[in-house]
Picture 1: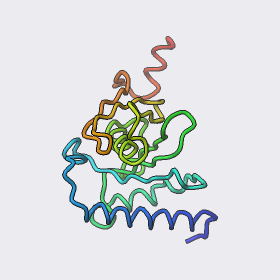
Picture 2: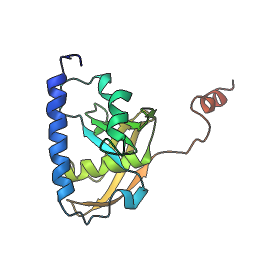
Picture 3: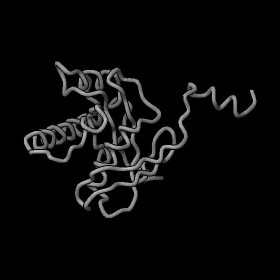
Length: 171
């Protein structure tokens, strides 16, 4: 293990996330949110308070062990929620094998619930910056608990990234 200059901040953040996770696991949840909606589960990291954003936090060596079902927390991947200059939040989404996704609707739904219930419950809509641009989410709830949401993700493109752009440019 190498002593990085941000190591103490990361350890403190991980300890805080673990404490919050234990509190949430012990709390009875009747909100029908999570696996009952999408069948996916993610580890959501609140990186908004970290002073430094380092790529090492989003590396395979962190994501894969944390996502391992038998030895880690167990998830389909990791969502890192960060501050944004262009939206209410910025997210980076990683699959359990460490690959980063450009756009993940389930991650947008998880993030909107986190933002609605924890930060911005009075807003009519939430904006989230992704690798595919800023997306608008309209949450539905009682002002405290989000029961569902509508995601404006844009037109689906089933052609691998980059090829559709070349077609539009006439190449």
